[in-house]
Length: 261
Ligand code: BV8
Image (tube, rainbow, N blue to C red):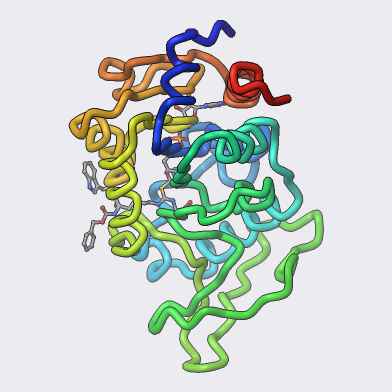
């Protein structure tokens, strides 16, 4: 992948760099993206149909077990070269803000700090009625390998504080984002010189509008994605490739230009 020289200069001279990541960053860790055909047990469902409060009210066992299945997958996966490169990028630039739509916690496992998790984190559970955060040991809730949704109609556990059903601590479609996180993400987008949009289809709002905020505030937009997205027509640099390949190349070029590495 050829990284434009002027992009290297732009990143190194920026006071504030922002990265917004989506499910594509975790694809190389073996976690299916939202757009991928749902695999295995879930081929018959659309993610958007299950990731809603209505779906949970209608069939709490199905939705709870879908998330327990996804959580097990996430707990078994590790960060890939793209996550590591994003952490290294944060060590090179003056100020760095990482905003993610992902709920897998892999940026934190790669060493990134102060991650703005716009859509929550599947590793945490809360209760449906009062959002009481549940304390869980790492790896709690792991099911045995031959988990079978067809026979597993276990209802969600109940909150020890109020008795309401547990749910994953994620933002479902139709639910408002945490205003603190959304404000922090918007402020970052409007005060940066370079905005990276990495591994996202730029379809889910309000996250998808952050790149436009950045553009209107004068930032240069860099998209890292093997495929075009609705954002592609307005980006300044379209790096067509996998995050796990493009980002390490970008970081090594930055380190060389910065006399590091
Ligand atoms: C809200 C947590 C209001 C759950 C998720 C404005 C316009 C249009 C629609 C709306 C709008 N405003 C609101 C909506 C409705 C809705 C929405 O956006 N719908 C979409 C489908 C049109 N938004 C909402 O409902 C949001 N809520 O606005 O509330 C409100 C206000 C007040 C009071 C009440 C309500 C909430 C949205 C959050 C939903 N939750 N996740 C869970 O995970 O189960 S979103 C979910 O999709 C994931 O977080 C995921 O990250 C996210 C977005 O998908 P991507 O990350 O982009 O992943 P995707 O699979 O789509 O694409 C992967 C990309 O990676 C591809 O481009 C691919 O080419 C690329 N790729 C593949 N491999 C690689 C790669 N890239 C790099 N390297 C690779 N190797």
